[in-house]
Length: 243
Ligand SMILES: Nc1ncnc2c1ncn2[C@@H]1O[C@H](COP(=O)(O)OP(=O)(O)OP(=O)(O)O)[C@@H](O)[C@H]1O
Ligand SMILES: [Mg+2]
Image (cartoon, rainbow, N blue to C red; front, top):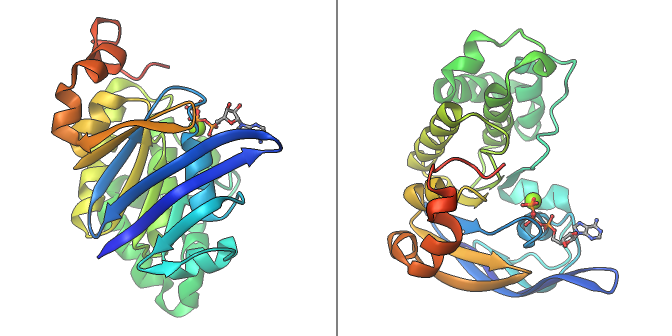
């Protein structure tokens, strides 16, 4: 069974369409990436799945139609989003930021969850008392992902986790994404770093001006001349994120 299935999704800002006729599937335990340039509609897509934005079409999670379900209920069902702006509580400690992510378990199990997440992110354990606002960019991204994992999601959606990070750190983050996937959580990864995303994913979708223009097996996409030219060619041959 698929964890997430989106059919003919459409989102508009007022009269202006941002996403049109998008269909995609994330299988159980799968890692699916959506790549595309600035303004393609990637964040809009994730926000619609999370229920932050109203949409048309169908969104099914573990077979259940999410139509009209509020954000909190979607979180309860097991959907987590790490937004583009990581939205951490800057003046709170690493540990307290994580505990806020585990609120749906209540206080009793939060300690176990914290331990599990520190196991995935040893760096966060080392820095558990540090104020979130003083973490490095890579550590902040780890904290945002760790906080999402505190809720034991079935689907983890990551909005450009490599954004603004140095190449070495980007490598760490993608290694962690592979580790997270190994825990069994299904992942929907939005990225502009097509090279790294297609390396780690099973399947990919290319989003351009709100529509899916290409989709397929990640390895096949990485070898597709159109992808190579647009996203992996000489201009972006360094493999570094484009901004
Ligand atoms: N709140 C908003 N009101 C009006 N238009 C918006 C709003 N948010 C996004 N848009 C528009 O919707 C389109 C898709 O934006 P979106 O943020 O989803 O793109 P993206 O693929 O995530 O881009 P990026 O890689 O820069 O994050 C863009 O044309 C953008 O200007
Ligand atoms: Mg975006």
